[in-house]
Length: 122
Image (cartoon, rainbow, N blue to C red):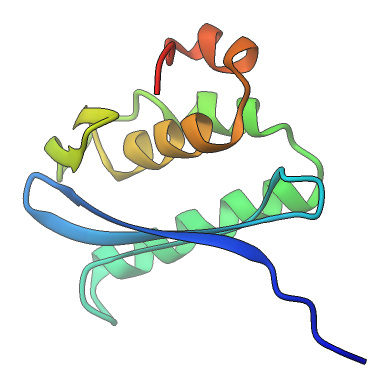
């Protein structure tokens, strides 16, 4: 049996100078299948919090929570680090969760599902 390779994407991002990675893989139908968020040094509080964020998003996806609902809960959360990003689609993020919610919505939701979230363009 040959292992199947998931289609994935790794995005390097910065929020107010804090560097991280958002790694996603798509299911066979093109929808979001799995998320990994890394920010901060291994063992740091920030790394632990982004690991927990990844696990909670994946738990929601596993239990068929719509991505639009997950993104709506993440978008708008405000805490440090916040500020300018290196992402031309998302110039300012209010937090890591805000950035992740916006990026996942832009990458995996059609316009009709992004519009109510205030994400009109890529």
